[in-house]
Image (cartoon, rainbow, N blue to C red; front, top):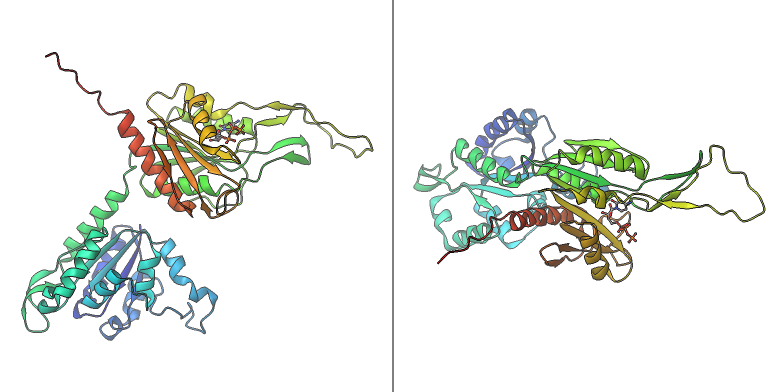
Length: 411
Ligand code: CTP
């Protein structure tokens, strides 16, 4: 896991150094972000040496410590995107208040708002500050938002007082991180087959027919599923995207190659999410030599390809099968038709003409049509977020479809 560790200003800041070491021993990579007051207690160099990574201290300083530039100005977004879990230890009353109220005046507070990763907060402060109504309220706001709070220990505090406020033990903090990350890995044990991208159908050795699919939606699904613990096999048409971490990628070019790759791997999958924009037709007789220019009109005869989704879903057994529907009109009607005709459990439909939806974009606007009659219309959101919602719906579908049948009483 890629953990971002926020260190804020408190005597316990030195304990975060040991936390870095322990997380790394578990195999996690740790990016440390320090607030200004944390640097009064420990130097960034300590954390840089332990984590092997540059410590982020400012919203606008670049990696070499030079003049602010565009890269440094948007670094919080880049860090937010690569954060699997945000841990803040020790967390002061100040950072808790800022998180609760959405103040974003430094790197850590801005990162908190920009990240969708789960958050674990381990407070440490003076007993009266911890017991203050303002802090109590802020902690409750965070808790209600799903933030995991690792309650401080009772004991003798650096300020000379005794009571709750001491940073929880490292074991307790590590256990909270483990618990939160495990809850994020709800697809452990699943094998998910994903298809993505376009297919290319040859006309001759130098020309082919393809569509505008970029593969971004399918790749987002593959990445999200792998992060949630699934074994992911991604059958990909030709795209310009990097293979997501932990994903096994099988490259194909034509609809027939994609069909072959998917049919071969379907039996081992528990879930199939077929997001590829497969060609519906291919040239009936691709030429062995390059087609020469002439003055007469050229007609190319096309023959239908096999519908891969319909073919595999015919005998899907207990597998959950998800298809996509790219539509330009009558979205709901067409999507429901595809759901039935292809024997799918879920159709992710999008109107490719809608603003913020469609090809080669980072956002999408989709409606999820499920077999149990539910229509879930999602607002415009990043494809990474759409991917999470699709996976949530897949799990919901499975619990609905595979719920034990209600028992009938004989009385
Ligand atoms: N699909 C497939 N094999 C094909 C064509 C489509 O597996 N030869 C799958 C796609 O991966 C997608 C779903 O079917 O999950 C719907 O694709 P779409 O292009 O929207 O629909 P089509 O069935 O091709 O129908 P039409 O183009 O007429 O809308």
